[in-house]
Image (cartoon, rainbow, N blue to C red; front, side, top):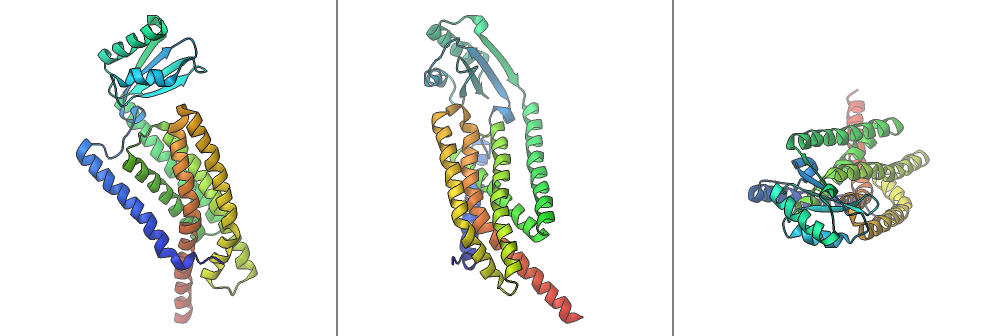
Length: 298
């Protein structure tokens, strides 16, 4: 039987180290660049160029042209691979003209093949607020669902593990200066659902074993349940990671979505095993001690 609960301090220390490192990078990034996190055009505002190439093309060729004038641009294929979308917060009218002229020369385009628009910072601010609200509502609904299906202590442990997953992902984004756009929010909501499903499997096994062995110590109960489910959890996360990693490698246009998925799914598997279950044991012991004191007082 695995001894996971006995090493709770180690698991918590690993997570807290990554989170604190992420916070340190956010502070450093904020002091040096004015931006703790690298918010993309969707949140910070900027310009979008849509260029109709009218035929299949190599995205890397377009990226090289764009990089000559703008270093922070995102280049994605659209319209079944026959058009390109160029997004950046630092594209000016001058650089836009230069980029389009190079593309026009390379792909024999006309002026009508270019459309552009500006995304205001106010729109990005509203999007940021709605994204945060979506994550908050998702976590509240998870707490209610698990609290009803199991008990409040299970729900609280699950919510803390979900917040852990979000903080770990944000830490990675801060450390590696990865740009955050709207696909990040979609990715995090997906991770919340995945992580909850993994956590519920473990909690369900804990509840079953609790009914069968009411005299079993809490640490032994949790360790037994984790031993019975850990192989399933690891195989599941490996299957998902391999699938998402394949998409990440071979479909560059969706990398803004696959990066948070990869980080969040791995973190979610870790938190389900090494964070949520130990937290439940801590909450359960504390609750049992309170009940014992009240019983002794009466």
